[in-house]
Length: 334
Image (cartoon, rainbow, N blue to C red; front, side, top):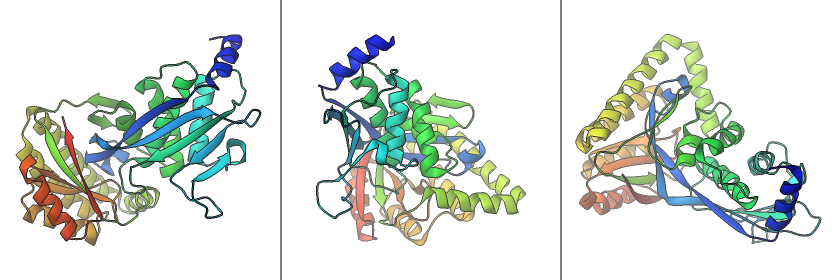
């Protein structure tokens, strides 16, 4: 699209409203090892999502961002609203908008629009909140200015935003969220669509403990640097479990998937990224009849997963809440 066409599209789009969404995600297998080029499996959680709305802004005001779920600096309700140009350079919302504008609006101008962000994805719980918000923004901006952004174009832009959140991201969050489908992922090799042979029923339980992916990943890297041989061995074992899980998922064997989840959790405990709260919930799920259970994401808090037979989901969810889970989500993967 040439500059004149871009300007025409920009003026027309500033009078319209565009909405886009993106799902949450959980890692089924391979967290942490995926940073070191071992395979991982991740799936979208469609039951929670981020939403970006692009609507007309004040004439001459440029881009404004409204983080509707965050409190305003003065404490007033209604969300935190600020101008794009006033945001810190490392603000992930600013980065998401600017990357999208650079990709889809080629005239170098700043349009007069309001970008409103809402999300039902728990923050800092390993469910890809940051990647989902960035994906929703990139998708909404692209559509607003006359493009039809595809996952293969969205994912690299979101990866740049992920660097602000996590420092050295593996690339799995932006991939599974942008594509919104189960993936088998190896860093540097890209993703492969994972075929699910039999529906997987997951109960996702929130410990209620906030966890910083950047801090946990950084701690693992320091320990890996101090004892590389030991940690490379652990990463190899985690990667091997992920490959076995891929086969079990594809052939539709939930019981085997559950056993491998238990094995993966034991390895993550050895890696030092679990927590008492996570271990308590894993044990509660197993006692309640789950096929398998494990922590998911960075660890030291956040979420855990229980694989269940569909009719056992309410019982397992109740047991998890009784064991201290702040909330539970039931999600089906197919």
